[in-house]
Image 1 (cartoon, rainbow, N blue to C red):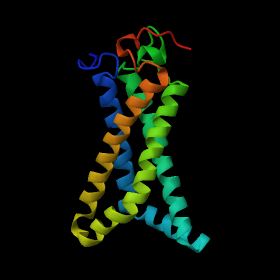
Image 2: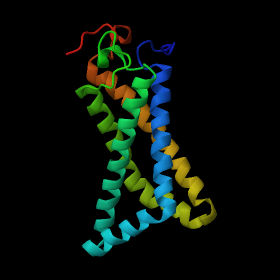
Image 3: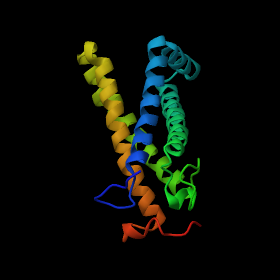
Image 4: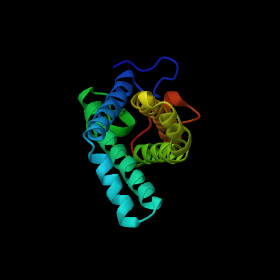
Length: 180
């Protein structure tokens, strides 16, 4: 697929589509579990087992981490299906490979951890207050927060992946850099 015109080698359109489709799968599955009530049951059990709200935070962190892993694996699969694996990740002639490297894994993990940390503070204060104030809009607020998080993680992920690869100074050389 075509590379983005402004920053050649930064990310392809197909790779971006794969990322956001993976996020849509994650959000869809999360909402399906939420609306069945199973997440609330598990959350209540976590609170009962620990006897404090700390158990709720641990559960919340574990749940976000679980969804992050689901989204990452979906992203890798979709990216390979679209033939959008970057050369610096999959190697020459392997655009359809389900592959990653330490730079990419570290960038995705760090970008996701940054969003999770931000949301655990912001979401448990401002977003929770909005949901209480506007109970009819709780699902829309949650969806807007999820979409915002997906965009934030994508931007941070792409920038960190580039920074970790050492190609920040010359993006045009990124695709020609040999794999380690």
